[in-house]
Amino acid sequence: MESPDARYASSTEAPPNQSSPRDSPTREGTEKNTHIRFLVSNAEAGSVIGKGGTTISEFQSQTGARIQLSRNHEFFPGTSDRIIMVSGTFDEILRAVDLILSKLLNEFCVEDGEDVDPKSKLRLIVPNSSCGGIIGKGGANIKSFIEDSRAGIKISPLDNNFIGLNDRLVTLTGTLDEQMRAVELIMLKLAEDPHYAQSFSAPFPYAAAAYNAMNYGANGAGVKFQNNKEDRSTSVTIGVADEHIGVVVGRGGKNLMEISQVSGARIKISDRGDFMSGTSDRKVTITGSQRAIRVAEAMISQKVASASDR
Image (cartoon, rainbow, N blue to C red; front, top):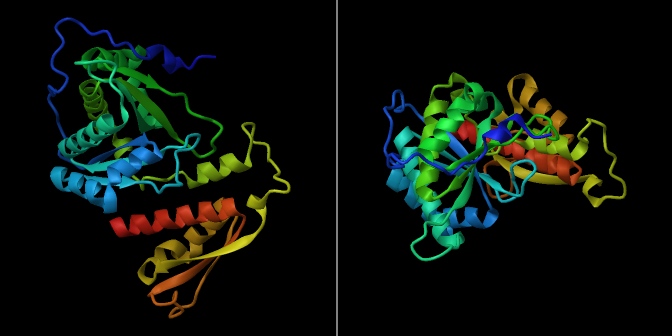
């Protein structure tokens, strides 16, 4: 059955008196820091980072925005695409997204012909709780955004195969100007949603969803993996800076217990003063299947990243 949101999918028709895609409506409260996340392929992520991180550093310097990417094996559930999160003020984010999309368009999009603006797809990640505001009553908002931006806009249904996933993909199709106008309109709407600001997190908060998806079928029934190397128990030791061990453990061991329960891995932290050779990093030994270790590593990295940000 077609998703209720699918009927609001792309129409690239626009009224004759369409304003320029980059004209901005009156904005209120857009000086506060916010964020936006979208998907890129692994190759596109490499292009955004640049050799030795030169491109991403340059983009951050030019715009004032912060640009973060999930690691090369950390994908949005159900895809093989990485996540980019751009944070900063409204204008900083728009400038950074414009730079990123322009670069990707030049490097990865083939033009249909001379003097024709190439069209591409941009997939934004939006919390399910914020999608209602984008759609609007009877689809009024999304129709207005389509008419104003000339971009195609389609909101995916929530994927129930991934337990713990509360985000949906908002796909924008069109030229760069059309996509940027749609991004601007959507961000203005998200700025009105107090819950959206609370959804700010590390670029990759999907460890639990990814783990649950690997271990449970769509109906929630457990799946047994037999004779699979992935499920043989093994151990990996990683280093975590001594000052960040507290956030990994959590008050009364709460965080450590959560990581262990979600991932299915056993986690042991070395005693104080017992460091990885040649460093001041404490040893964190993770034992379990390869998939359990990957999930535990991702969750530990997320805890450390959030502590570093603060």
